Image (cartoon, rainbow, N blue to C red; front, side, top):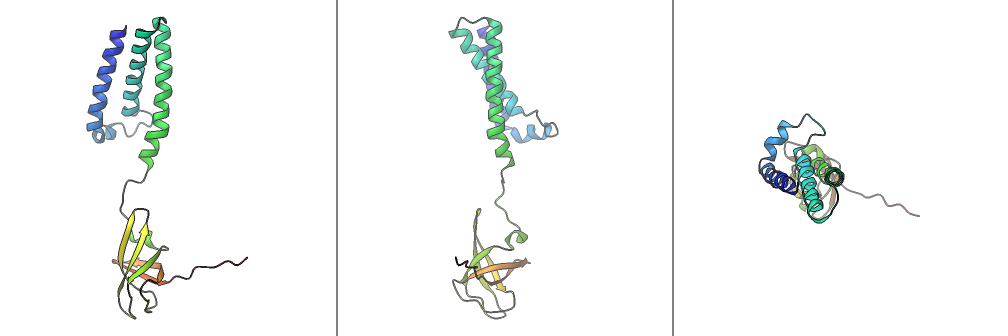
Length: 171
């Protein structure tokens, strides 16, 4: 029985490596079925066969009990991997791109002064990094260097800004 567990473990491990290399192709095939995930299935068989092999080799437990214990252990670990690794990774934002609409309402700092009826440059710090954009005053007002500005509107590669005045609460 130990040789069966060892064979299944080697085959599942090799398939896991192949899946790692071609996962984008396989994910499209299984996309419509919510709980059939090749990574979890391969994880289940690899962990189950490894646990079964170790239990067969180093304990004197019966073959049926070995199979049941290995299946329970494998199901538990596979569930933990699915819910605590795969689901969060797949739902995470994977793009560093931003849209002009997403800049509206953010606060930036002027790095090139904005003249009246002209253009300057603003730097915006986001979770994805630092973005610099061409800027002009929303009401065509001049804004000095190192002033904080609020982005009111963004269109055609230009952001329209106003001086940012933080609200101070006094207690």
